[in-house]
Amino acid sequence: MNSPRYAPAGLLLRHGPSAVAFDDGPGAEPPVRLDAWLVTDEHAELRSALRRMAAEHGLVPHTGNLDLDGLAVRACPVVHTSHPAWGYRIEADGLVAVWAPEFCEFPAWADGADLMLAEAAGWDRPIRFRGGGVGGHMSVRDVATEAQRRGVRRLVFAHIGRPSLRAIDAGHRSPWGEWGSEGRTYTPAHVRNRPEDGRA
Image (cartoon, rainbow, N blue to C red; front, side):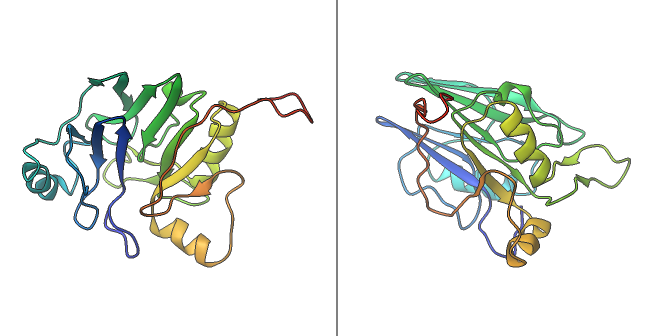
């Protein structure tokens, strides 16, 4: 997404010796050798730039599944636009992380994730695409409510759009979850039972 403040939303996944890039774009180049470059939308506005960037690593950006040294990455469909779009369920060491930066309906396959990096284009209402209204973006407030209801343990907002930037600047806070930060490392972790209430 063309953001006035951030580089395009992306994720660099590291697990042991393996490294996989997800999405990204100019200004968000992966700094390491990569095993694969996966995308959520093969028709995205940055596809030409992504092809050039991936070619520098000897790779072709694509949608698909991946298995590397105990790391399982599965492309899972999301409702987002009129053509197929995807998110990723990432499993390793008994933990589940989700990369789903764009959707207009919360993906059921993200239920119970230890860490979810999620859609944040809209703030307090969904964004609907013009031209027939097919697809769009779920609002931050709705994503937060659904993620908490569906047992996501940690929610990080990525793909932060202009309505959400205006909300941040105005001092508004999401009912649950945290804003993603460029260059930060997010590590999924098992959640231990809290003695004060016995819940995980």
